[in-house]
Amino acid sequence: KASSKKEDLGKPVTIEGVRVSSPRRQLWPEAKFTKTDLVDYYRKVWDRMRPFIENRPLTLVRTPDGVGGSQRFFQQHAWKGMPAAISTMRDPADDAELLFIQNFSGLVALAQFGITEIHVWGAKANSLTQPDQVTFDLDPDPGIDLDALRRAAHDLRAHLEESGLVPFVKTSGGKGYHITAPLEPGANWKAVEHFASALAHRMAREEPDRFTAASSKDERKGRIYLDYLRNNPNATTVVPWSPRARNSGAVSVPITWKELDDVASDEFRLGSKALSGALRRKNPWADFFGSAKPLPRGS
Ligand code: ATP
Ligand code: MN
Ligand code: MN
Image (cartoon, rainbow, N blue to C red; front, side):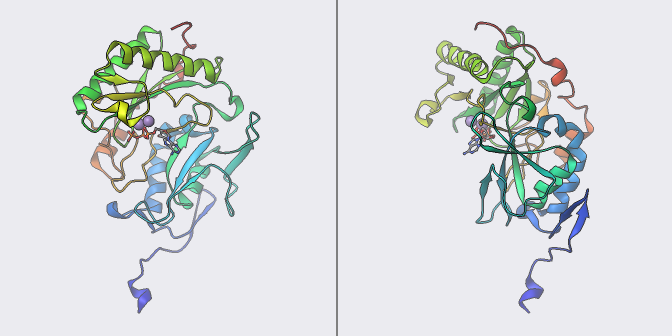
């Protein structure tokens, strides 16, 4: 009798060589979005997501009972029963174990284990000491309206372009936007962080009413925190096209600078028309790595 009430989780299936158990488990119960729905979604975005996830160290958010459930783990290391489709390596800098995937099967394996949010380093596994991008994470104080946040994004874009870089923007799937410019690998983390820090502090100094470069929530009151601290080994940013482990099922989606003025930071949600619409449009980040420039000198 009890079992008739139990959710039907489905029989195990094999997808891309990965055994997927409980394929009908709802990882986003409010959106009724299942594990196989997630794999089908990944199939659609893989071409666009691949350059940003493949062979990069990962931090994973694992919610085996779904995003509203009681279990939530940050996973940076191998776990018992981890499938072969997920790879590990040692960070030569500190001997820490790092996780990464090398193909679509790896992504299926992440879905299988109830990973509902994927974060990546800004460097590749074969070049861990040389980031290939510089990232700014715009974190608005709750009082900040969307127009002010968008203006901040456009201003940051202008500053980066003045430096000779080619910035791209995506929704975070949360409260803010992420702005990232591709770099020709060469400079080390320290130099990249120094560049990002100098720009964030300059903007905060010139317009202290709008911006802060300090992470404390007190400092943020009525302002936008220009979080430049993503530019560190071990620091991560949610990968383009990753869903968020939140009830909304919002996704971090690459957009054009023009679109920025029309879409909210949590506009795109799993299973939504907005998200399928984004996938029908031209990939706004298609030329990301083709636009790489060396880290600007001085600042
Ligand atoms: P929002 O738009 O709501 O700020 P966000 O993804 O930018 O969403 P932040 O809290 O600003 O969230 O964090 C920026 C990035 O830093 C995250 O995407 C994540 O990769 C990383 N991060 C932040 N906090 C942690 C944490 N406790 N553990 C691991 N990574 C974290
Ligand atoms: Mn943020
Ligand atoms: Mn942040």
